[in-house]
Image (cartoon, rainbow, N blue to C red; front, side):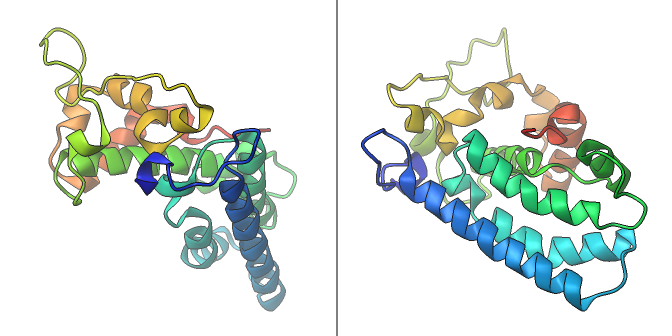
Length: 208
């Protein structure tokens, strides 16, 4: 199952070499596009630049991230570097540090957006908004009725680092920590809003 990471070839060191190459290629493509876009435009207003980034660059970085994202620090730095450089070109923000630029632009870090995307996909699985059955992806926790929410997942520690970084394992603790009122809401937009409130600072976190 590709979602489980089983289709990713491993190096002798046990690292997902295919994922690293995919990320490097993605960053190369996104960085090349950002350079061309910045060269061909003169407007540097926050609204214009972030709309341009959201519509043309961000889809390249985030496409199918639930499948290939594994959270290795070097990969995260590469992916974050594209948005980091772009936000520095916004008028009036060049002297601010990256986190201050994110705050000023009301933008999440790439790391934060990957976390958000994973949890949204978790929600879709549990609310039948995709074709994946919860029991096909997760080991569900027994319903004790005392702690956690109704969609709690068992955290099964695997023997391989890659398996622990796969989609079905990497966000289990964060998912389980969400309030029941958040995971149980039936509307996707409402979930996104409540999720942002619950995650807070985690959406702006990044690897320095």
